[in-house]
Image 1 (tube, rainbow, N blue to C red):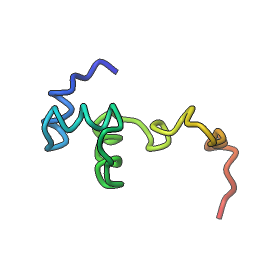
Image 2: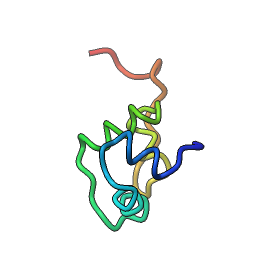
Image 3: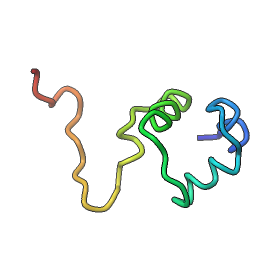
Image 4: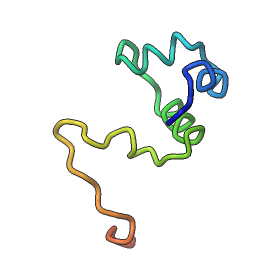
Length: 67
């Protein structure tokens, strides 16, 4: 996405080393941090789960059921 670990870390309030640990799955991240990163990067949270093993692709927003 063209964002460096350093810029992402500063924006999220963590160290670049922590961002690297998240990227390599060497550290777990909280839901709050996941939300914060999605806001910084301008993506929906489901962006981080696309292509994950065992998950199906969620329907497009216009196909979701109204509650």
